[in-house]
Each structure stands twice: as structure tokens, then as C-alpha cells.
Amino acid sequence: MSFYRRACVITTALAVTFFGAANSDVTPRNPIVAGWYADPEIRRFGGQYWIYPTTSEAPSDAPQPNLNEAQRRMRLAPNIRPAFLTQTYLDAFSSPDLVHWTRHSRVLDTKGVRWAAYAIWAPSVISANGRFYLFFSANDVHEGETGGIGVAVASTPRGPFHDLIGKPLIGSIHNGAQPIDQFAFRDDDGQLYLYYGGWGHLDVVRLSPDLKSLMPHSDGTTFREITPPGYVEGSFVVKRRGIYYLMWSEGGWTGPDYRVAYATGPTALGPFTKKGTILAQDNRVARGAGHHSVIKEPGVDKWWIAYHRRPLSETKGDHRVLAVDRLNFSADGTIEPVVMTKQ
Image (cartoon, rainbow, N blue to C red; front, top):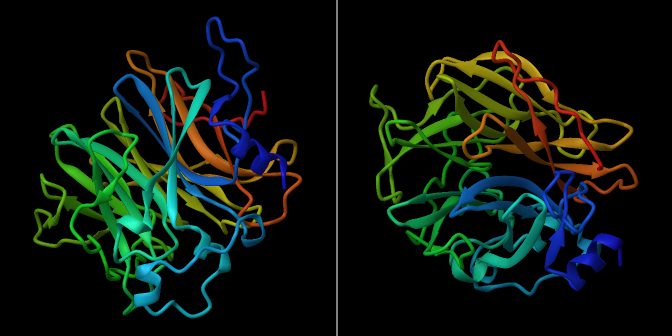
């Protein structure tokens, strides 16, 4: 059993990252938590930071799961990666200070989603209507298969989350975009958007106020493609000083060319102009850095980026860990390259 797996079993309260904190009794470091995780989305709810990641274990690291009801009922996709069969749940982590983290196990499980069997990944959580909504991908769908992007709901950010509508919110392919890697974004006018897409295509849809359905855009279309040059997967959007920043991952997720690029635009729908790369591997620290999220500290123009990366000692594609580092903006509004750290 690896160090990361042993630490996962031993503790659920972890002191981590390189952030400084007053009266901290630990040495902050990256990775921020123990265990194989990827695709972290960082949010802030009720004075706490929350990170919702994908579970990322290679088949040899975890026991093969028993087929649940959905897997028995559904035809498994051909040639599915064995690791996807272990991705049947999501954990979450909370922190008051970005230093001390507490694990919340299985905030979502396929046992509570009848149509989802495996390949649960890339959670995105947003608060609305006094509740918390978790969007997730399931089943790694191709054309004609059951699965796609679902939405679950809970009364607290720690869950447990339960399926909201009993079926995928987006269950088919539009504009060539596989329905995965979703990100929920609230604009200043209150409109909720969902950005999503794999296979090199990025779509954006409008969510209804109850988050149970989609609404058409002003031009009458429901699925609008806004794919920037080089896009592969993992989109994320923030607004700062009137500018919308669209970010995404490029390259192959198991390879050294995995990285994060960004573009800027005047609205949540663009048009977006690509600016460059902000996160890439560092052969002194880690490889395969990507699929990120970004958060601003309350009350100050100070930003952090959460992302996954592969330790230099690891060769398995699923062996990814979570890290958080500073994200800095230049005076002209461009984003400076992120410096990956261990301490």
C-alpha cells in the first residue's frame, strides 16, 4: 500500500498546503490531502472552503467494486478503462483556512443515482434556493449510451447528495461535445450557466431557476458551442474587474503536455480571445498539471488555483494528487504563470 493510501485510511483531518496561517501548528505543504484525487473544484460556503474532486485510483490500488443495480441493469460500454469501474463515489474536503482539511467521505454515491454506474467525475457544486446542487458526469457516455451530466441536491455542502431529477440533465452529444467536465457559474444578473464538454468541444447552456432543466439562449438555441483554440476539457470561468476569464485544460491527461490555458471576453458567452498558458508541468515538482479551479479570498483581490498533478515518482495515469497555489494577475489584467510549490 502506498504512502497516500495509508494516510487516507489513517486520518480524515489533514493539515496541508503551503499557505501561511496564524498560530498554525503544522508545516503547510502540497499535495494538500493524502490520496489519489483529481479534477478539484474549490468553492466557499458558510465561511468554509470546500474542494470537490474526482476519486482517481488505479485498479491495483482499490478492490474491484461489486456491480451495483445500475451496472447490472445497463450494458457496460465496450473497452471501458478498468479504473472507471472504481469511480463510483465522490469525497469532499473542507477547511476553515486553506491549511487544515477534513475529509467528508462519499458525499455522492452511485447507490443514490439509479442511472449512474461508474465513471463518476468532475463534480461542480453551487448554492441556490437554500440548497446545494452537485453536477457530475457519469458512465463516460458515447452516442446512444445511458449517462451524461446529472444533478444531485443536498441541504448542506457535505451532503449526502441525492439525484434531483432521476435522469441525466444532459444525456446526449451536442456540437461534438461529450457530456462531461461540467462547471456551474452564476453571472452578476443571477443567471446560472453550465459549461461542459470533452472530445475537444466546449458547450455552454443556461440552467432554469430550479436547476432541473435547461433554458434556451437569446438566439433560441439551447447548446451553444464556444470552443477556444486548443481546448480539450475541464473548463472554468471567473469574472474579475469586468472581464470574464475562460480557462481550460489542453493536452493529454495522462501525459506531460497536460496544462491550463485561458482566454478573456466581455460576457459569460464571449467572444473569448485566447491569451496563453498559465499552468504546466515543472520537472522539479510534478508532471501532468491541469483540470483546475480558482477562488478569490473574501474581501481582497487575492486568488488561489486548485488543480491536480502527478508526482515525479508516479507513472500510472490515475495517480494524481491535489495541490493549491497562488494565482496572480498582472496590472494589465493578464494572468501570470503559476509557480507550482511543495512547501
